[in-house]
Length: 142
Image 1 (cartoon, helix red, strand yellow):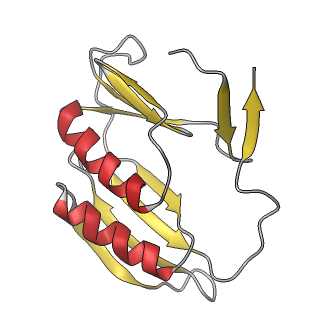
Image 2: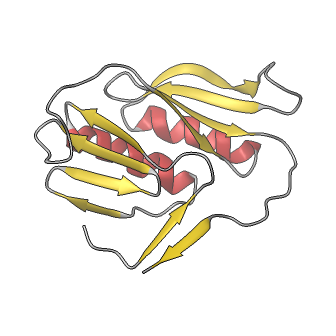
């Protein structure tokens, strides 16, 4: 996997999900990241990646060969409409509802939706309300 430029956030370097059916997971994640306006970073026969998210099959060289169970992953959304569109795209591409779009009690303005991906991982899109970011991402070039 060769690249000349990476984008990273400040807290999470990457998350790897080892999945049973890579094709089903790819359909699911491509649909939801399109809604979130994040491009696919790259792919191979046994993996694909998007910014900090790396998804591979159990037979990938990057995996240990064992499915490890349910995980929770939250994507950042730019507004409430994006959270709504994320939920709709996820359900249309193999996801299962795990919490319809709406306000949550975590803090004022926390608007989120939850779905289970094809492997049962809890995937969230969240809009934290009006806020100002210093940059859309950290850009790393080689």
